[in-house]
Length: 454
Image (tube, rainbow, N blue to C red; front, side):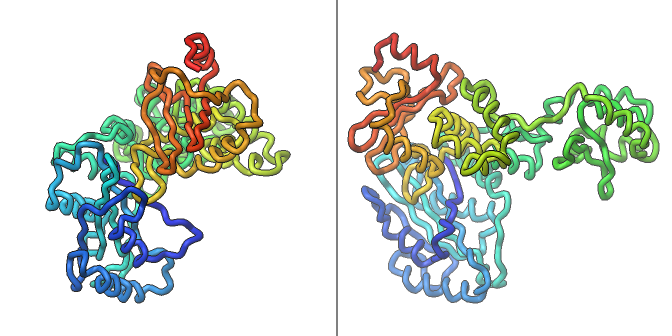
């Protein structure tokens, strides 16, 4: 099960009535409506009550004319075989659990399940204006709440666990604040907090050996870290730019302000003479924003190109010159000129559980993200004129190395190639007009040639 908020197109005005009717109509090609219900409206709970219920909801929403976006569109996608396990009551319970996790239990909503071959999914449109208090709800950090609820519901109803958002991924995030998780999800770069946790053993060892505050500050400086007082506690800060921090108490119980002051006395900041000496020395280690995805064959080359692009940013016009905010933005821009960036984007998205649909009714486990629509269209339009070796315009004779079909619902399909570590390292596209395009790690392509797969 994957649960995800579907973002609203910035160019389209918020329209709850249109979304509610879309859910009821199941108007995507090949789809049909399975179950439908309404919650929180005096008009009723069934499909025949929809028009009156929508009018009721719109009347509530008019109390917040100054707020532009007053709708939360939730999509819950189930794995093949799960539909048979879920009764109408179970589906309503699942929706109610997600509403509770988002803080929207008291809010009006329209919900429906759609069927499209093996693609069984649920849409829920929540009115973010509370009908009783007329206050707006703002579900924040919903990614974590949705993932946690999905894991609980999978266990409750014996559903398949989606590999994109497994318990293993959640364990990776243990110890990270919501801010650090958001940073990693929006940049695909390692957060300062992850660096601290990965270096925890050696940092703790030096902290425990420090006889006083000044020695502690100096030992932390060797890791490119400073310790500062903030509000009533202490925080570790990455010393180079000071933009990311971690609560000392969240790092370890022994490094909380009370624990350290009990051992070393009242907190002392680093003395200026020591600051000057530390500033002249190069730390043995320090935090650097490295890619989250390690060990991928395309990471090294593209990461070096990203660093070069950042250094040359003032001299680079156009889209590449602007796409230097972070690693993720760079890859999305680079995908227009380097197909291996497309492969790396897919690998990142899968690692973070983000191989999700971007259009209503399409399978979240079987679609390529909207972020790749532009680059893929560019490569398709130029494929006939592009004679690079990476492109193959005939169908492969074998598909043994290809797994995980992706479908955009318009006759265009893709298959992902994986290595021995199950990372996505290649991409095979089949367009509706019969053209096949392939890209992947150069070494893998050479091996494919030797095996006469093309």
